[in-house]
Image (cartoon, rainbow, N blue to C red; front, top):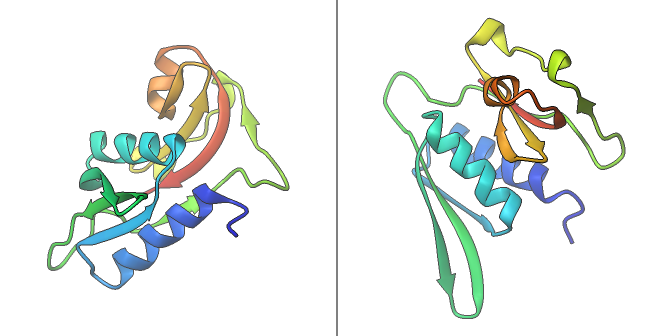
Length: 130
């Protein structure tokens, strides 16, 4: 049983990216689908789909795999089940001086740190991607 589904998703993406795989599958949940949506909007993945196989639902993520460079060079879980990390709008960190993004879970939904600052809202810091 997985105790942290978001960390499981990020680990699957990280491992598939290091192995130069084109797709990765993970059990689906609303938060994972929203994280995949943000990654697609920011250009870190090609696409994602919700797939039904037999009676199970999966989230299939299509990674950007190009020779020479990868779209995702690093991905890190920030808030963990043992230590949740909440930030206000003025405390949202910048990743690699703006080259990466942070993904937050806010009352307005899952969004990047840049969108959260624009909407003047804070929340739980889920992960950093660069």
